Amino acid sequence: MRNRRLLFALSASLALHLALLGFGLPQGKVGLPSTAISARILPPAQVRPAEPVLKDTLADEASGRPATPPTPTEAKGRRPAPRTPEAAAQRKLSEVLFYPPEAVARGLEGEVRLLLTLDGDGAIRDAQVAAGSGHRILDEAAIKAAFAMGSLPEAEAREVILPVVFRLR
Image (cartoon, rainbow, N blue to C red; front, side, top):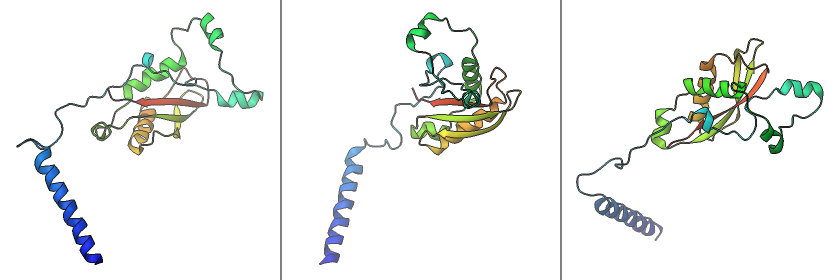
């Protein structure tokens, strides 16, 4: 009895799959859909992180006070400096960031937050994933890009949180 049910289920599954394969695709067309997938890395001006890109975590610990970002009303009154460390870091990152072809083919997107450890000259000594994208291939590409940047001379902090955004368009 049990073998009969298993044989029936297997037969039904095979028949369903054959029907879908036989009637689902036009004759002679097998493979990927005709729509092309393209990818691009957003320029720094379009990437808006939820928190400041560069954060001096050691200064906050030394002073004993939590770092507080400016309120929107405080930020409105100020004009952004033409060359901020955050913009420089994002600009440098966009020059070396490589979107893995396998991730593009699979349609993977995500945001990786890296914790970079810098020496006194701003050279990157270590890069770790602080918050992953959920895809190992994107996390590894972000770490490779961080080391490819070499240094962040404008950064005075010893630890930097750097968001790396992977988006397909």
